[in-house]
Image: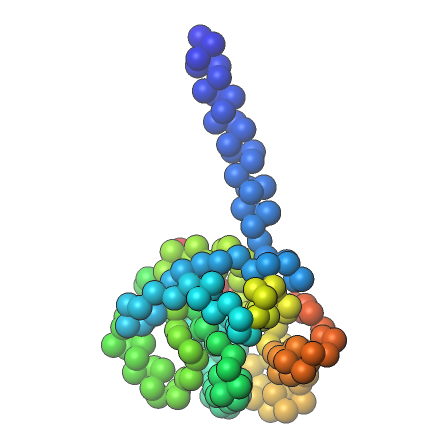
Length: 205
């Protein structure tokens, strides 16, 4: 009887503590970014810790989301990718869409999509179980995170401050990714470290 009581107590404690532990792992600005490992479209595995010593951008992506199409259709996202990877920044596009949900593509279709869009991330990482997306509490596509060379999260939120699907708004918007990277790389204070992300909801499993 005592053994059964102990087992039930352990189960109840697990149910109570697990959500707290998951919440505790959620990334916070000015705190170390959680490490992770995901495979790219070619099957090569990448870990965040592989890029220590570099600035890293995490971009949650879904090419069929109209908010994502705004930034890719205008060339804005690819321009950011090319500009900053050219300066040594690592850019990881992450798809946490589950199979058979919007944004998930099999390898050949994904390669075709990336080629057509001229997407230029360092790697496109696939997170079909949504493990990394939930770890980072990625809510929308796009949802942007920036990590400094010491592995500390220095920005989390929207790509800019105008939540729309209108390409014309891009020129009028304050691009938080650009501002954060430019300031941090120049050793200056970051004006905005967090903002509300906007876009389509991440299509988790």
